Length: 397
Ligand code: SAH
Image (tube, rainbow, N blue to C red; front, side, top):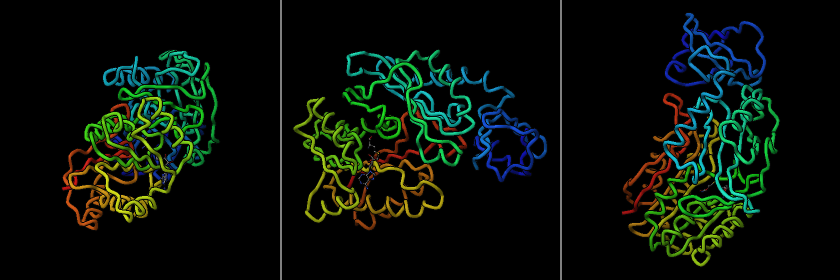
């Protein structure tokens, strides 16, 4: 049993699932990592059951509002998570995130499911798993068992290597957890074939959260010259090329990512339209502007500039800088697809930073769409960390 200090329960009552170490008045018993603890307010109100992470500032993560052992919660929670995806995706053909941590009642657990074909022509599905909290890591073998029982994947790959692991007292853990996992596989997104590197691609191999935002960008790309900045493996740029963009310049600082863009372009018969450039996007945007280049559609999908509260201000300067540069590159009527995936930067400060950039660029824009992550990355009301992705589509006047 974990009793909170007076008035620390408000956030939990409003839906936020975390208890920080400095909010705890006392702990009864001596829980170890992974133990289920009952949460209680100072006045004795029951606040749910949480997994204990003894080394982390986020000391407990609630998984249920009931008094339920984790072993009885795991499979029903997984089944609920799968039901949501089945309602939103064609699971026979589409890859998606099947578990999104706290928002699925499985704190610290991320599971991406890729449907596709291995190089030896074996068709099937593979899971890429990240276990990012000590409380969940203690249940890893039960999680693997539940995933196998619920989804019968050909293989399960673990990719727990995010920097946050250190705060949990966890070591990076990468390897095959079950079955067999090919180095890479080919999957479909928006009708295009992409190679996904399950063993060493960034994060779990592919950024599934942007799938529908890529389609939204592509809808506007017909006939235009497109710049895909921070392109990774070319998700946005190739969707635009397939939708009839005149040309696509895909920019990233990672050479392996660009090699994947080139291979993906060839795989989809788009090589003629797509070229790549290895560069620091901050510098390249300036350089393109100086040399008088113009684009009809620019995508900005940088990595999370803010990794914590302290770096938010610097992050906003970064967002302002790239948006200002991109705005100057746009033809009249051109589109800016601008994203932030930092949970520390909320929607209002992101949009107001973009407005600052427009003022400095001396240009006017219409906001055509503001889009969140795809519905396989659901957000928990009251837990703004789960609404991390912002994708705004603007049009220059
Ligand atoms: N748009 C991609 C995801 C981008 S992830 C998609 O749709 O899948 C962010 C990318 O930015 C990574 O591929 C990373 O290699 C790249 N990156 C990080 N810093 C960069 C910089 N300064 N200049 C160019 N690319 C950068």
